[in-house]
Length: 240
Image (tube, rainbow, N blue to C red; front, side, top):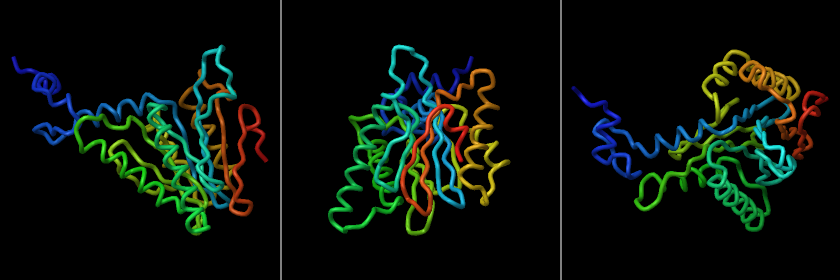
């Protein structure tokens, strides 16, 4: 009786290091990390005609936790926000790195850093941990969102260190289903308010009776003000 491929890989040790390819060309530790990302709570980022936003599910069920102490959306600079999915402690290292890069750029060049530069640096750091021994890959995907000289931008860096710019994207739990809805519903003419309504409707459709608006947070940046604004819970539905 033939042994399944995944069991063969485990028996031969291909899944014990991030630097060893299987005969089929896979890096198993990296693929395991990608599965970890899909266990994380979901976020949707969207580029709109008047700005950009991230809507994130904080997924806090423990009544002992002070909700205000937990956040899924991070401020990188005055014009950049970020959301993560996966191992949050891994993400914190990347967020700290991003914030330092943004501060150093302002101090050196007296100008705000471009989103792609931060994304590229973070992605390079993640890629290194898939190539060298003695460390595991970062178990996190990160969306970097903000306003640049070219207008609103949405970047996503995955576990492997690949990154792309998107009109809209989702990371975390049920990301493939969310992306299917986004491909169907997204329009470039959306305002932030219209985009947030669509994103909320998608979460309601997927989570069904488990949907709870009090577990969500929203951060958005307008093209004109270029100021980060945050809303939580029922305030999100009342966005003007």
